[in-house]
Length: 222
Image 1 (cartoon, rainbow, N blue to C red):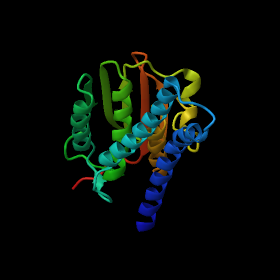
Image 2: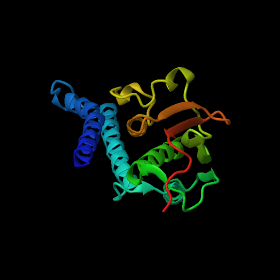
Image 3: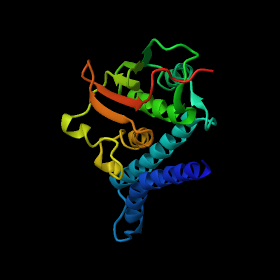
């Protein structure tokens, strides 16, 4: 509905505002302290905080590109996944992106196309950022619904930090750098569909994210 779309827009703006608030405040505090000179190390610190802002803005812009213009249409998971893998392959040309699935091009899932693009895009972008060389996407169906797995061969996440990833309301600077905003967005979408989002160590010791949406394996066909 229109109200739901407006609410999502407000949530996106709140995410962006929250993500840039802390680095902006840090730079402002330094600039307003007129009693201190600005040695090179401090200038570098300021530049670093501004870089943080740039990264967060770029992440939000990339998320918007992943989302695409299609709202209200059911998803074609195989086609959407292939399009995103092509895009990510150009964003991270040194990385290999592979897909494991038995789904056909005609297969549809009872998920909005817009929402599936956000889930896939954020998970794949996160994996591409942290992987050493390889990212694998899995699209699967079982008797209880539809599953997405994204696994990378990067450094992984400490086990005691896995439960906090994507936690709604947790400050980004309290999470492992680079894993905050995108995973929180994935969790919000997953919750909206009554699904689950789980994090674990992958088979190569990297990071693995698993999304499961409830539903019948009959999917939607034209």
